[in-house]
Length: 421
Ligand code: CTP
Image 1 (cartoon, rainbow, N blue to C red):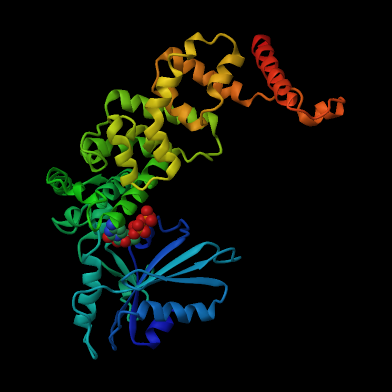
Image 2 (image 1 turned 90 degrees about the horizontal axis):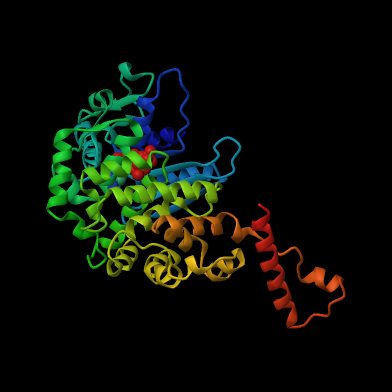
């Protein structure tokens, strides 16, 4: 239907990027459910102007009123989302106009059309992401099953050889977040980064390209938003461990801070915090990826932590945690070994935030770690056997004494609970 609409206007329509890659990586007899599809419109008989993608999206929206349309960005990309639709549930369709330096002019011949989509593909990150399938006719016979494949840069060979390869030497200089994307695709797809591409990554890092990711740079807010998105992708994926190792091996953690290194101690801490989180928060309500990032940041000198967290535009409570960690440690660590009773430990730790104590726990000595673990897993969950309503029902009149009574009850519950176990 979309292809017909494009064809009626004399435009070509292509599916591009990750969708094509995943389609080609899926074995013929296995179904593939694409949820996020990137389409590019390109002029053929008639030039596509820079709003063709938006025009097409508007037409589709009229035909599918249940979809939601948003238009964004300098390049006028349109996105259509089908939400809670019985058939197209959660389908996300991005429609863009082919971006080229020189747009096809009226009556452009197919040569110009080809170079137009070619240029759009050439500006992309890796050969395996620079493939396109034409959805509008004419279609070549040989690709009748998967449509008409456009492969200008050897993407298919790289897909078969399982290689991540950039299209040009400046790719990482132009967009440093691609360093993180290279790692993400390599680990996720079980590909290797091709040696020349690895050299380009190292060159980009050595030349200080990550300096552009600092907020003081004019382009930085957009870049850091993308870097944070890539970090989130990596740190929340099940493959986060090999991905983090690979980032460290490539020296790419320097993009976050020039002194950030995955030392054996930090590697231990990040695995330890992940185990703790897995146990303490199996529903992942605490955003484990963010806490993993915080533990990386906390390995830096105190004065640098907040700068990095702010630079990455982390949420306020995250910034506060990395800023306050040392102060919390000074307040808690000398006191904790002196506390004998569970109720005393509870009283000391109760006013601190749960996640802050998790961060402190994995960075502390075994003795302190053990007490914090006991608090996080047991003591913090204990409730007094009676509450205010129970006291009322027992005939006690509400008064300021309630608070004291409930506190005493909680302390008694805590202490008996622990000695009973
Ligand atoms: N792209 C790029 N450079 C970037 C980000 C994206 O060239 N820094 C291009 C790639 O062609 C990519 C496409 O935009 O395939 C879509 O980007 P995105 O949705 O982020 O990635 P996908 O390849 O679709 O991968 P995923 O399956 O992880 O979403």
